[in-house]
Image (cartoon, rainbow, N blue to C red; front, side, top):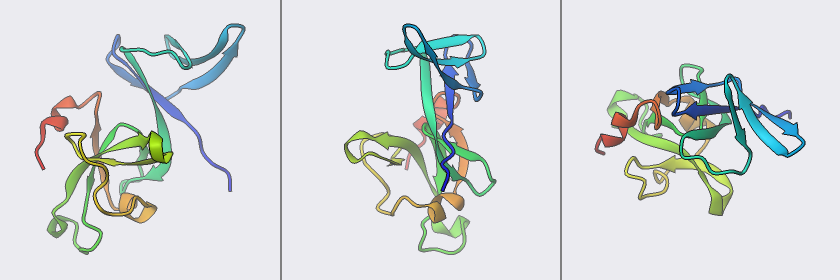
Length: 140
């Protein structure tokens, strides 16, 4: 099985999300490169944010990336609207070496449901944490 590994970068200088991002080897190390931008791999930036594609798509066939805000339904209820859909942020869990959900306030892990293709294929991306910060103000 071949994995599809790709990245995007949000650049606070231009206020744009770039999807044509690649890792380039130069004499002084590896760099993230995109239109009008370079960021040394491993360096911290408070103005540029690299996010990885998690190899899953939402119900509209949109690629899901780290940092996306998704509307997720309760997997135990058949009808989406009746399932009391809630918002979650896709994040990397370093201690568990996996992608999963965060609640919008960032304090709780997961939703109590397993993070799987079936749940996300029935979910909907409604924005991301950089281009749609007002969504983070939503309450559960």
